[in-house]
Image 1: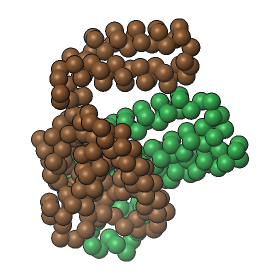
Image 2 (image 1 turned 180 degrees about the vertical axis):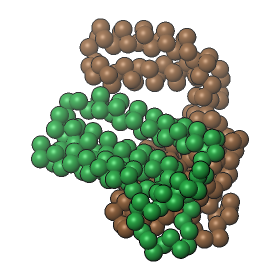
Image 3 (image 1 turned 135 degrees about the vertical axis):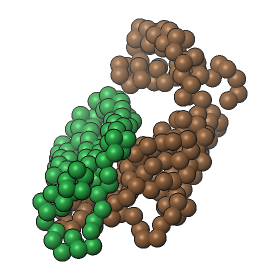
Image 4 (image 1 turned 90 degrees about the vertical axis):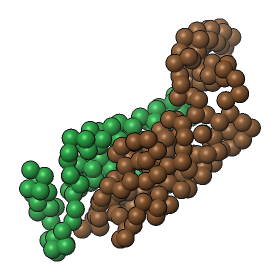
Length: 167
Length: 116
């Protein structure tokens, strides 16, 4: 984090963006009231938004975000076809278990995004987050898997994409 | 364009339906949460995208709905499954001799015996 003013800027930008999306107009009076409201909201709430410290504000931020979103949507669609196959097949091919994996994401926001991504990708569901380890319910655990192989299989690729814009 | 939008809405509805079927067929609470979350999330995306094709002017509000759905639905399912995990619900395991009888009811009743 470069300085202490960036939480204010990030909160302000998010509020203004949300305002613009909801009003869907660039008329001057709506724009001005949106700026004022975003300013008030960001001044009040930014000191409490510690979660925003996880953002890595640098030049490649939007590129990282977009490539993550693309990979995430592909994984989501794959997950759903996998799930649809399981639901309509007769024995559903279930070998579920709860496995523990290690994450290298440091910030709370990074862990939140990682846990959400895990929940929405093929056959995995985040059950709990303790420190830097995640408990994951895995619908089809491969034989002889330990903490390293499951970490590789579940989170390695997501972490690579998330590191682009989160700590 | 209207027709393609209808197709996307149908696509979303099919996945929500599959999620509901999985909710009935899956053997334990964790698997049910998985099926419910994923099916409903992609179903919602499909329906929102179909709506966007039918009413392109609504794109901004649909985008906001999409963003909040994607953020909140996995969080809520994680929270529910965490509550179950903390209260000691065990994970369902397939017994080797259960492979042959693939009826859903047998597995469910098996599971209840194991849990209690």
